[in-house]
Amino acid sequence: MPVFTPGRHPAYEPIGRLRSNPLSGGKKSGFTELNLTAMVDMFTVIVIFLLQSFSGEGEVQVHKNLTLPDSEEAGPLAERGPIIVVMHDEVLLDGDVVASLEDEAADEPGISALTEKLVKIRDANNEVEEELRRRDPSREVKPFDGHLIVQADEETDFKLVRRAIFSANEAGWTHLQFSVTKLMANGGGGGGGEG
Amino acid sequence: MGVSVEGGGGRRKNLNANLNLVPFIDLLSVCITFLIATAVWVELSSLPVDQALSDPNTPPAPPPDPPPPPPLTVHVRADGVWVGRKVEEGRNFAVVGESYDWGGVETEIESDRRAYPDEEQVVIVTDDGVEYQHMIHALDLTRKFEYTKSLLGGGPPAPSTAVR
Image (cartoon, rainbow over all chains, first blue to last red):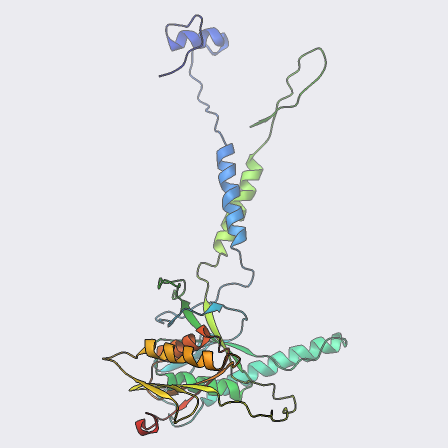
């Protein structure tokens, strides 16, 4: 029920408006004042939330048609690097097909095409490092510290993954990070798996 | 929206000023669009493994006295999982139905952790034909009990007579 202030009240709304503003001539104004305060508040909250979840390092894509295995003890991805994807019959490096395992000799411990590509990436990294050291002689000399991200379908034969790992080790990449889907302690699923 | 400023003096002057919110809303809209476009919706998790347990550039350390115990080995085979440090002391957990007995494996790793509280090394061996998810599961169980230095190995299926 509305609350009225005590005193005289007009019988009809138009009469009241006429009395309060005689110049308007009884016409209804076409302008409505928007209350922008609530909208600005909402925008501010959204911006703060998005800034908090912002990552300057970008997103690591998971190859489509790939189901990652589950893990409870997994941590966040610590280092970025080239991504090796081992599918059922293909090996990809940063999205490009490097080798088809049907063509490869299954008896070989590694995958030669993958080793060559990784050696090239390592050499390119070393050249950049040398150039930086040439410009700044005080720069610390560090051995090559190669970090690789390995993604494989959960049903892939680990023999294929092992061959890719062997190739990586041969090329000097020894720090591996196996991409997994993080499981919560109570068994619930976490993120990951999106193509 | 208005800003009210208390004014002094005798004559009452309206000191309310209107703030122009339009540029502010424009700026917020641009920020929201940019942040949504660059948002990371799926945070990937990973299990790190360093295959080189020691830096190859450093000279090898002298052998410790007494020699350290052999590392814990988790051998994932097609017909079961073998856990142990020595062949004669290890335990085999056969496949139950169509799945591995991960509960038994976990108990065995836990008892090894109690026996060797300071050890960090583990070797995970997988036979050819074992799925990737089983290796990750074995790695996950060892990480649960803080075996942080993992070495992955494998090869042709091992004969079952080598284990008990």
